[in-house]
Length: 422
Image (cartoon, rainbow, N blue to C red; front, side):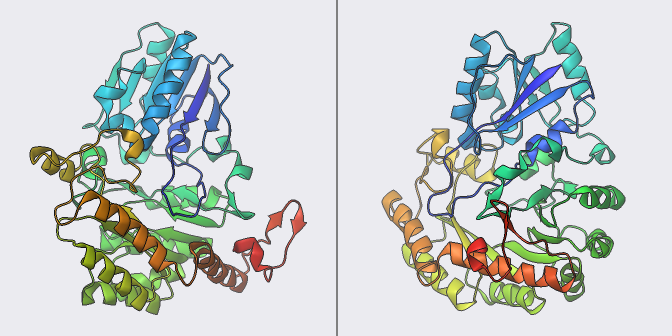
């Protein structure tokens, strides 16, 4: 059976330096397919999609709401050719009712141990319009090593530098953050993968730089400690979401290769100041993730936030506008109070105002978004700051003899050639 697996394009976050990470959802999904499936994967963000082929089935891996309009167009083109289309992924689950109107079948939930039955239905002409496993998670032990072999590796570089590979060590999240859909998607129970399975997958990834995409590593202290200890011999360098604010765990994280973390910054308190300082004290960089437009913010609050981020020497900052995604707690609240303004998913890119802010106008929030990006990166552009972060990790790689020289157009460049990394 031939499957064309497609990751649709979307408009990227305005002001952010353009780059494309190798997608995680498609490679995890591909690992759940039976051996007889020949997968032809195309990431439309890095390659042109030409709809002139005739696979047995098309799979749409839809992570973001903003991918939906393009996904519908692709589905329509293939269905017009008589080729069945199955959609899955985060946004297929969040928007299942809507997605089901545009495809032959929508898969809701996690696919481990389930795809053979779906494809048997397809072969027998009995494909169901909906496979709903949202509340029935497969055993976490079934999660295997992702099929990164389907990726076109040459497409995922930044100025010649290979970008990080994505991997996950757990599913589910015990936290219930107001803008997040994870509790709906993966459940509110922390489901860690067996450590040996995680280490096995990490060992098979050729890339030395990784992004551990778990929503938070700070969910179980004993598991977190065991994971970091097991990672130390691999000498990988990695990025993650928050690590537990604990000296022992932060020390272990650095020894295990922690490069920098994505840390949500919600205010200008001493708690946040101390959080960032402790990361820095342990040699770990910080990229702040800052949501603008929360109900407790005014325009002046946003300006003070930017000043604060510069004051605490944050390496990088990613500013986004609060976006009420489907199935998130904040969307339910906005809907009840008549504050939702747009449901055009192409605008759900976290850089457009799609709701009515509480303490400012829509235009004031939009301009505050531009102000935050422009002011934070006024002295040093985001590209320069990213380059500085790469220099730090290269020095660590040289120290532990894992650095691989950058190759650009088959021309080996020295580490001192800063153009290679910004």
